[in-house]
Length: 189
Image (cartoon, rainbow, N blue to C red; front, side):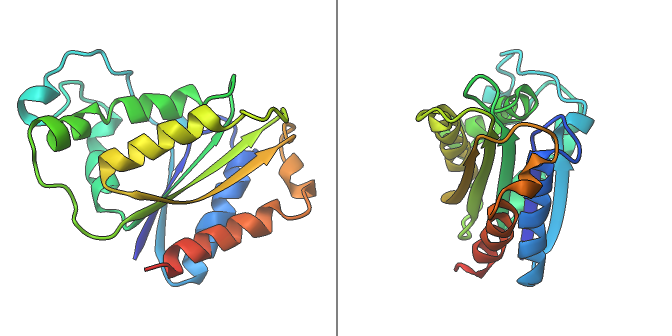
């Protein structure tokens, strides 16, 4: 089983990064091979609505997204992690998701076959505030992104009230929860 981790934070060794690393460690402990993508280190232009993808399911913009499409379609499990910025996912992660309009076009416009295996995904999010609706918009974005990829939204780890770099280490359960999320995601059929 191959688990793809997508780290959407621009802050290396920050809370989001530490959590996704623990989730991937949990997946690895359950026997999976893991791969981590740090979105901020990639060159991904935003979607420019050229709609070339409506013709053949391929984006006309060529950058680091070219290397990600197949990986998104072949991973058995996907774990996405993002900090909250104004009650939404990071701009870097949103850019990657928006560029998957090409995959949406393949599935819904061109009616191309998508992976038919049972694939699952999880979402990890960290926010500084404690607002009741802190994660609502982001969960919808990730759910619909997973739906486009043919991935079932299987689990989530949502942590409020954490902001300073590395502060997640002081949270009583967060790192263990992330490890268990990754392990459980791999163990599920």
